[in-house]
Image 1 (cartoon, rainbow, N blue to C red):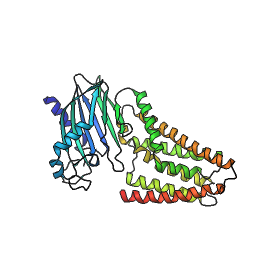
Image 2: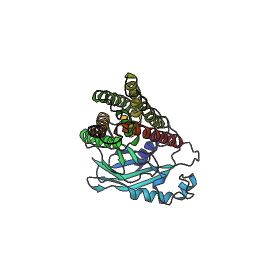
Image 3: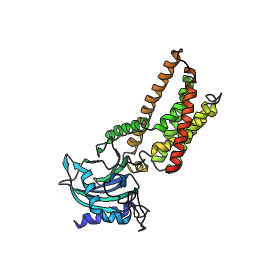
Image 4: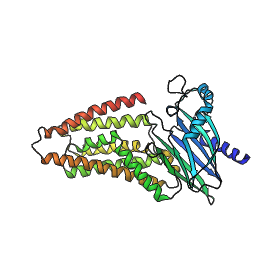
Length: 360
């Protein structure tokens, strides 16, 4: 018992004691020590019921203290840990504000320290939760799990979200790879901004050679920055990346509206530059914690391949539509569709740009 308390204390210190926050928002850690699983979990305020007394979307230190027991109950009811189909025994739950310097700042998320006991050391621990917020950016949780396997540290990164709220850890590289392929496909097909950008670079219908070059340019570019950012080599803040992605949509759509907008190496270079920016946006879906994973190659390769498969499916659907419209020449105004689509992209890009500047 004393040993576990000491371990929990050091996990608490190492998880964020040297930083301004215990744990970044939308993140969680799981550390397996013998028969015990120690968790540090960030929980958005928007997912908790009857906790925000003044309804401002934030919790003060006073509100955290006032509703401490209720928060513990909600967390324990909605955060389930098992091994081999058997639920672990909840042994300890602490509720803390995310700040470590003692400054009483209202916060839109809290940090939970949690301990779960098992009858035997969990080989493949499974976590299931629905503690996802309702605000933008709160729809998923990136969890990093680690344990010692014959003296060697083994770690794995998983993404929990509403559509996939459970994950079983330490099943091997292939399971991680296929899981991140799914996540990558879902991310690209659910990313309105990325799909809108893809639409702006292919809607000009400049021919198969152009489509091949421009899509390849975009793919190479975002693959580079996705890897660099996920490995924590180069990172750009989200408040720069997200408005920049919206701005890239506007730039490409405006180029489409020019008479020569679909030609020249300059356009390819612009697409490549925009792809570098989009790669940083893709990386935000898995976070810099991928660098801590023992299976970082499977994680990055699976996620990147998933993005490419989703991108291929979308581009294929758009090109098929362009082909069909081109073959059915009697459709009134068909030759103006690229112009109308580009005008719509300018408006939507401006809306996204304004929203993201406001929110960030």
